[in-house]
Length: 138
Length: 108
Image (cartoon, rainbow over all chains, first blue to last red; front, side, top):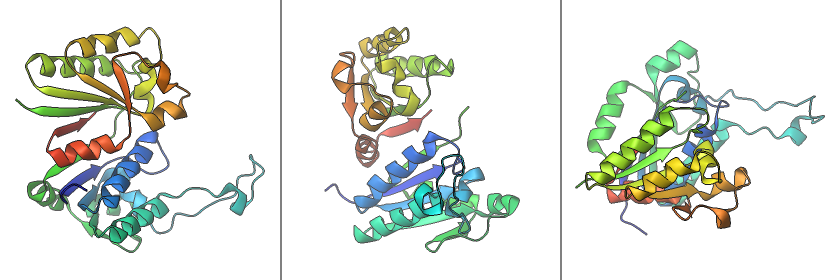
């Protein structure tokens, strides 16, 4: 086990859109399971990951009801990562950019995440051992 | 000299910017920096023998270590046993390893 570090991840991609979200969640999950102190700054569409009102749906095209479809939800991935961090003795400060939240009307977050501002990202980057920015790409 | 981990997630058949990213990796390595290029998602596609594999081989010849995310390889049916000699499969954990180590990690 490496020495615990303070790592910042800045996320831009919205949920339910592309593979980058899955890779991002995998990365944060690995860091969480190592017990690191993690700061996640979600901005632009990424503020939707922790939106509490995401809901599973059935899929008539697949012939699946709600339970059979078992649609994955980003908010559940976030909750699982928060739990993994706690179990490993780590800590995650999951910050949703307030400007981006207000633009999208997604102010209801799951427990364990909070509203913040771009200034939090600056503080996080300055106070971290390392940072990774995962921006949206075409 | 600096140490870099460059992450490439795009398919070079879809984005010409991938070539620029390869060029950046090669330039840094030629300048004496330690550079690892990690392929993830559709970024692993040139690791299957194709018209774009040669570009990857050139990056390796410049002194860049090239890794491919094993999960992304499996998703795309790319047999890790048939990767070019210049590409090694790796767990995504390598990104966290390098962040812990203080490398500059850049995702394109």
